[in-house]
Length: 375
Image (cartoon, rainbow, N blue to C red; front, side, top):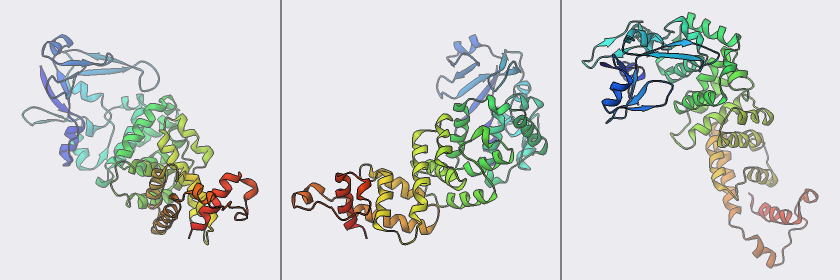
């Protein structure tokens, strides 16, 4: 029995990046032997175990054979006779097919170190084309390592184009697509990911709520991305919302995002940006304009939504940052008004609004009073 560190941990160590998790492959062992050693098996489809102490994943060396459509249509073969080289051969990219022995020596049968040095993402074997999920994984890796200037090998790019053209991505579940996008968002790489998917003509299969993407949208997005303030709670929402805005997403197109398993918070923040940004940029805004934006955001009832909108909106430009400051000032000027107290003092609010006929008397009165406080 021999244990090797594999995959992302080896790749990131060679790149000098922090290692987030460690995965191991076990050669020459069986299910029974792993259980006797105290390893806990997880799942039934693959021979994957958790180390009894570290809880790191340890998987028996295995091979895979295509048995159907999509990324789940595989038969897994494992046993003590499977070699490390056979296990590494089933992996997607050469940079992910490097193993490290417990003495620190590297096992690299497919040229992963060379591709790391030349900043190349290259598939390990022709079996790459059997798994459509690998198209998204390559796009995600290209985005994650953008600062290293990785490029996708020409032969790998050709395989990816062929898989898209053959409709392979249509076999992916919506949940799995969103998981890859979510991982990309965590790496702050959504713009680069979308750029790769756009160049592959795969937006309709992966992000149909992003109607178009091009160099101009990419440049605007990356400029906005540079303004993020390392806010773990809001930066993911900001990336998604800004991508929708710069791509020209309509509210009808955004509605498709729910079907593609995008969380409600992402859809809601995008809707706020799409609905209100043009009105916020309007010159010579009237008090009614400011009030409409605050109403659209539901700011008085949920002030946290105003904070979210202003955070995302301010990343578009310095001008929008200033406008958001003004919007917040107008909100603060109205939030503590006691409308009922004003009513008790005899002010009904009639005669203040040009749009009174389209509002109920109660909301008309309240807005009329708010309007008095808008600067």
